[in-house]
Length: 245
Image (cartoon, rainbow, N blue to C red; front, side, top):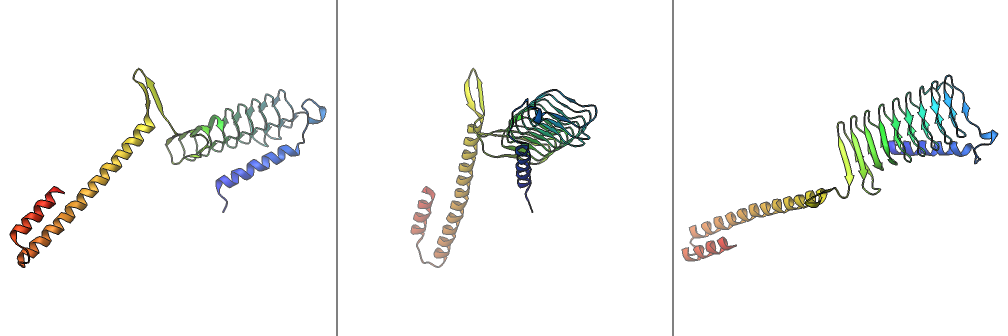
């Protein structure tokens, strides 16, 4: 079966092929004018912007190759290039190749962002996807899949995933807090504490192992004493040596 990411990539490629099929052209020529096939809609400017049949009460402010798809009611696209809205009451502020695929979905701007669920919002950035209802994302290459969730991707281009409902995720290499005390890197501090905790756990495990070994040696000495195979003096010397280790 196809993964969601593979389906998204396929849809992106299809959209780009459709845009290329419109032809390389110059805005302003009569051949590549805007098209409004709906009722009660407004198409202000730009070129090759389309409000499709059934996308009634919609508006496109300008830009190029922006589309309000068939039956997507009350869509608003301010401008930009090749932005697509397919959901009712969906909105795109601008940017390039952004998609609002569900009802009440919003993309404020950026590049290759997708809002796939009801009331999903992309605040901006690049290659972000929201697939959870009432969820929000911003940054770069961040995917939010749960409902009522938020994701902030500042990891320098590495993929950032926020899974689960009612979740808040931040992907970053540093979290700097500045004040009169100077700068404080929260991530570095948490990492140091985690490393310290790991060291403490390892020391505790070694102490348990050492206690077990000491018990085994003590039991062995007791057995040897019982069999008269060692003297009391030698046994006391071995025990004294063990206590110093």
